[in-house]
Length: 176
Image (cartoon, rainbow, N blue to C red; front, side, top):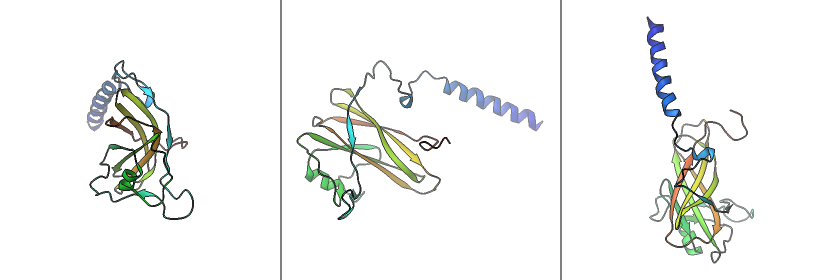
């Protein structure tokens, strides 16, 4: 009797999951896009938040409760050294804000963070952008934050940003 009940439950779950997995919805991790999402890739460069020069205080996020701090899942465009000082403290690499925009994003998770990487930045419409981030987790069961920072060519003021975060089940190059 137990075998029949378990088989029925497994069969029902397989049917439900199979239906959900057969969806024709695009998967951004596989590079699929709908016709409405004719996104244009925007070139960017990573911006290190660490002690790059080896002297002075390492750069890092300021007080997360600060009124201007990016909220969970928010992308912030920074266009001046004064703005940058509101988010980052310590010594950080210079940015030519006359030609570049610095994008900051962060979030939190209930697992430890191994690393967070920016996969791509896309322009999805005039004045609208989407930042794709992958966050690799470790086995720790702690509240942990991830953050990323990139520079890109100057983005018009007032632009809107969306954030897509992927939490893969395996680490990079691990085969797990």
